[in-house]
Length: 164
Image 1 (cartoon, rainbow, N blue to C red):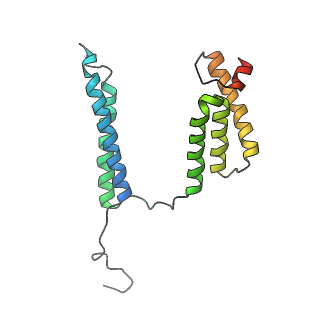
Image 2: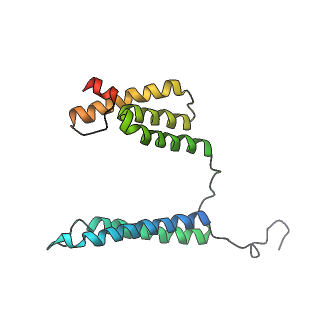
Image 3: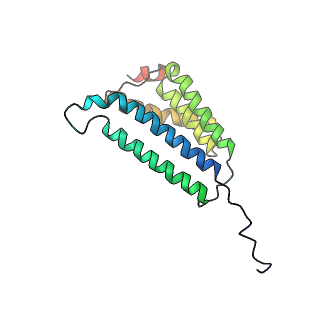
């Protein structure tokens, strides 16, 4: 053995704990789907295909992905991940929280416009005084299309009541 090559035999491979956590979460989601499907199973009646068929396929697919992810985690074949930046994650989560808090009080356009501005800040556009009004205008257009043309019910606030 030369001095240039590291001793690969003595190095221990450790499982990728993040990937194993993802595999466990996938199994948990599949279990929840199986539990819900068990309650709907009798609704199929005489047909082999019913409202439980596709959710069953999805849960089997999730279990397959969980097994595959666990195998890759133990083999160590997953690519190296970059360091997680918490700033953008904070902006997106704060935008979602703001939207949930504002949706019933301020209406769809304002709440989703605030979400738009916060997500733009997460992507590096920190001018909230510009991105929030632009988001409100875009979301008002979306609201008018969905509520006016498609007759869908979205939470209306004072801004939406001016137009409909």
